[in-house]
Length: 150
Image 1: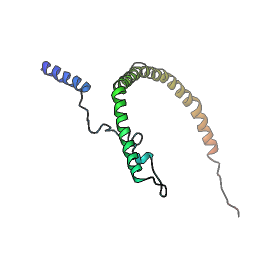
Image 2 (image 1 turned 90 degrees about the horizontal axis):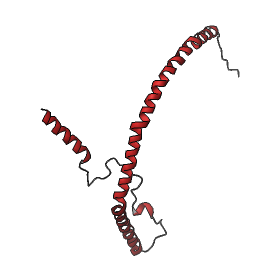
Image 3 (image 1 turned 45 degrees about the vertical axis):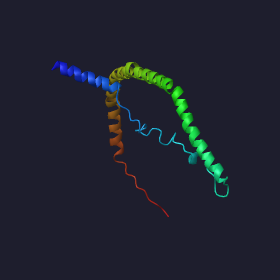
Image 4 (image 1 turned 180 degrees about the horizontal axis):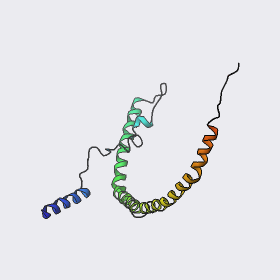
């Protein structure tokens, strides 16, 4: 029984680091949908009355599309892994700081301010509640009548 538990635990640990990635849909959460998705028509457009020759327009379209495609592929091949390493390190540091520094500080602050909160609440209920209750009773007999004169 314990041997089966260890096997399942090892499988879960291994799966979290070696999960399969989707090579077709590389932006499943659509985080770059409206920012980086740039086509020729999004950048270059000729209004009516100002058109270049059809051959120039087709060559421009092809040049833009192919150069963007290959430039991205070459840059990602050269810098993709080092930049991924840097971002992985950066987010690991952020996670470490959040887990080991930020949350303990926040929890400590909440524990310490709970005492002050009780003292503050006691003072408000002791001094302010009777004052405002008395003021409410004083002004409860005041009647206001609004008239609109023409």
